[in-house]
Length: 207
Picture 1 (cartoon, rainbow, N blue to C red):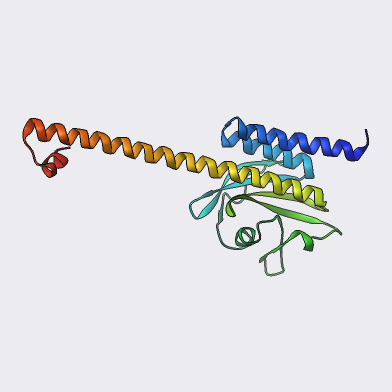
Picture 2: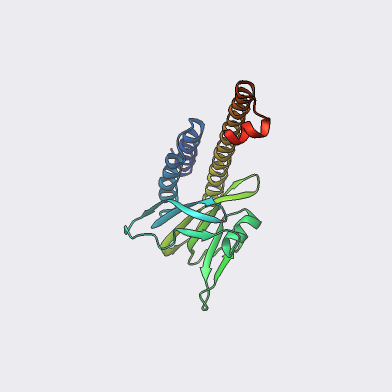
């Protein structure tokens, strides 16, 4: 079996494994942990962080440091800096800093092939909405192939859809709970009105 065929089979196996976590309804932690392992094996990065949207921020969810250091950033502002560009372009971005320590983000066509990139950020998307990012850091610059960029982007879409579905399920659960609560309140009001001769407003206040 040639090297290219082996690569294809490995790629398919990794994406299939992440898909299985999602299809089985595993916890988000399990799917994201599998993604960290996949990303590190794919691009041989030194650090991998996955952030998930939490209100107006991206919160650090899972990570792996080869040097075991504590993460420097546990929150990222949503809609500012490179996260705004990720939401706009919806493709992996290479992130670098200029001499004024300001972040610059570049789309894949602008990535360096010599010497390569040290920081790549992959969006987690659901219906064009940015729900998280995968950040990959290298101690030494690394060249990324088109195959790797497409794989990371595909995994980002899978995870983004999973996060989006999880949030819809949570919202649906909250709505059902609210509906059941309203039913109980209405039933209680009816009992108080009937048994104690209270008005609807008085029965509501009593509850």
